[in-house]
Length: 469
Image (tube, rainbow, N blue to C red; front, side, top):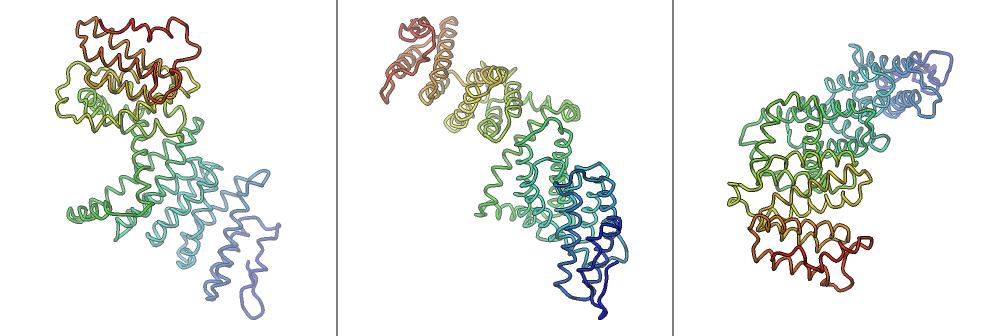
């Protein structure tokens, strides 16, 4: 029990936190009792000290410096906290004061055992049910931000994001303002966790993204409570927003959407649940060039970013290859509806990102998959624009080996047209211009040809054997 001075005042210095003889659960109970008495006395200074003592005690249990953390002690401590919060006799003022720090502390226990994780989630759920939703939303977002600097393992963020999902539904007004404030923190968590993927805890990633989907469902439920006119005005307000954090989160939202698509594609359970719907969507994209190129552009940030693992990029390229398989490159009814000048820049940067993967990836299977996908995307470009794309890729490449690969693609295109009897004078003149650009670079200097290529392939370009006749 907490000791009192003869005057009846609470003496925090004599709380038995430092006494090693009582069990940890009794020492924690004494600290919680001290919290209650300090708030009842109205002494704000001692109240803050009492809350800090509880937090410090919990931290000491999961201190990384401990040689062996006792799971039973940790579990009993969490149960004592949960019992105190849910007790009918607990002081709501004390609960709200503890809520400022508890989310940051209890998530440190989730990695110890499933039971610790369950109790930690119950503590956060209780805080959601009893504390101010607006205040708790800020607290949970702050706890997430703090935890990122400690560990990016998804297990620590599942209870926090789950709490955010539930607290959204408790907000009574200014819904859009609260969602706007929390969204950057949510996306930052998903971004941080996915950038350091660990296959050994892939189930945790599935739970994390399921929790993120739950947040989306909560936001949908919020929108459902609002009138259509209110939603329209809110969208207008957001679109005019000039806040840097909000603008930055939009780029993360695009990446998050792309990652969600990739996750759905590679996850057997998601594919099984989607059933024919996934097949129908892929078939629709394959049959419509405009939509197909939109998807290619959507996946570009994942391919070009240095923050994602090669495994994620491999799955991204595999998805692109799957989309390109089965497309009809000869017949397209939507070509007249496509403004090629507007989509070419996006295609160009995506193809450049794939080129960098071909050059940089250490795994041969990734390089081969990237090259096969590059060829499929280029083949999907109408013949009248295909040479222009190859030309701009060649002139903007600094890699002699990549230039040689692209030149060979030009050769294949011209040979294919010659065999089909469709070779045109335009292709012939374009090819001659390309020969001049490669052999005599506009910026001067020697031609960009691979130094270790064999003589026959090095002279192929100069001889012009592959040019149309």
